[in-house]
Amino acid sequence: MQLRQGNTPSSYHPNSLHDLIRSAIVKAKNLDRPVLLSYSQTWHPSDPLLFLATHAQPTQPQFYWEQPSKDWIVAAAGSVVSLSPNASLCESRFEQAKQFSTSLLADAVVGNAADLEGLGLDANLVASPYVLGGFAFHEAIAGFQQDNWHSDRVTRNGEKIWHGFPPVMWFVPRWILHRTGGRSIVTVHAYIQPQDLWEAIASSLATTLMELRHNSHENSQDRAQGNSQNASIESSHHNPFPFSTPTSLRTEEVLGNQSWSGIVEQALDLIQQQKLDKVVLARALDVSADRAFNPFAVLHKLRCDYPECVSFLVNCGSDDTFLGATPELLLQVQSHVDYLGLRSNAVAGSIQRGKTEAEDRILSDRLLNSQKDINEHKIVIHSICDRLQSMGAQLDKLAPTQLLRLSNVQHLYTPITAKLPNADWSATFDVLAKLHPTAAVGGEPRDRAVQLMQQWEACDRGWYAAPIGWLNGNGEGAFAVGIRSGYICGDRARIFAGAGIVANSQVTTEQSETTIKFAALLKALGVT
Ligand SMILES: C=C(O[C@@H]1C=C(C(=O)O)C=C[C@H]1O)C(=O)O
Image 1 (spheres, rainbow, N blue to C red):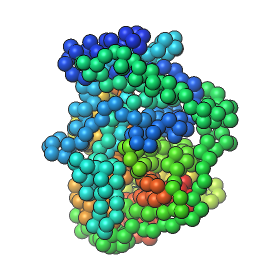
Image 2 (image 1 turned 60 degrees about the vertical axis):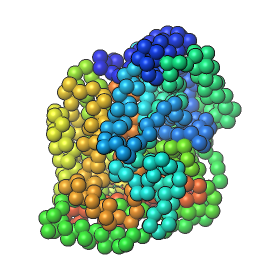
Image 3 (image 1 turned 90 degrees about the horizontal axis):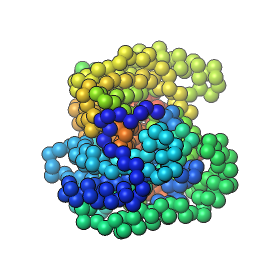
Image 4 (image 1 turned 90 degrees about the vertical axis):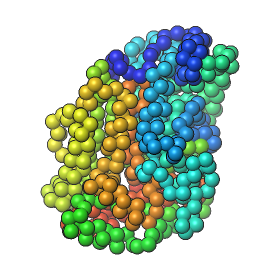
């Protein structure tokens, strides 16, 4: 863990909660605008997903992020302040999120409980305010109504789509539980107005903390699992989400004007005519069940099956939950005194897993030596590197391309790291706007590819393949590409899978690749 750097957004305030609230009110009065307060304390070790499932209310926004490779879990719910996307503004949704986050984190008043103070500097770094959420793939979602995004969004064939998802949901949660290094910390936020009375704020924060502490189910689950500081979720034989799984499930491909293989053929024609280098085309499946899916149980299956991935869940406070386990990190940032450290992972080029070790090795070798996949992967590396360089980023020496093996599929994978000089954490949003969509989920040239997918794909991508992530007051942040994903609404789910089409792609091979990718979500939903 690195030490707090000079240009991190929030200033640290080591006082009691009551003193902290007083300082925040004084600051709000002096600035004549609301300020964010965050207060953190250590928490008893618990499974953050179970914690979210038992403490979030259905009408509250919810967010979950589990990144085992970074030993980083964030579970959050409620909202003290959120960005209301304004379609009439000419700024993009990333620029709106930047403006929203900048003053919030810059003015934040941050403090820790005495128990955290005792743990030293490292703990202070973990305890900070967070802004988090996600974005739609395209600037606008089909049928989105500015004033009424909870209302039914209906497509041309009369179906409700992406019902609870605005083009951007970016918010400061009421509470957040983060677990890293075997340590759990709860942070509560308040959005303090200049005229607020400290008693009211103190009582509201105390109520939030009390409600979080009070939950017999969570505590009994902890006892049942014998949770200790280092207890791993995967090693627990006890299923923390016992619920009745649907017994009867039906899947149906979402049909557009043309079949998926038809649009792949058309893409190949354009590639042959050298009008396009790559386009990623997605399919969607509707799954319906005889009873409601439990999104937390579905995510639990995904995180157990895909520990190499980022498991995520976002609910904007409606009936719909978007979730998945993605192998693709779009952007990880770390603020330093005179630069912003960047990391983005190129993931493209895929083959199935073998049934035996020998078969697996043959398939890996085939992928590592496939000129078509190497080219497809290079297009993605170049799309990321060129865009970072166009912003003035200094790229580190490129690491060799490796294999990324997931339980259903293996990919070509290259981590890309860079430094953005003289930039602070707020540049994260500029980098996101530049990178999304990379050629891993968009194509090359980007605008042409995006136009084709909007014209050809059977349904709106909504939040599929778009950035989901968080930023905190220590100048750290991470955004994943929301693939291997779908949304759940009661007894229905819509899941997505795409494949990159380049020169020499074969329609049947690409179709099988999407089938393999669908398998992750299908299995988690209970389709065998
Ligand atoms: C678009 C998806 O995956 C992307 C496409 C890949 C490919 O075509 O080889 C590999 C990984 C992802 O970049 C998806 O899973 O939906």
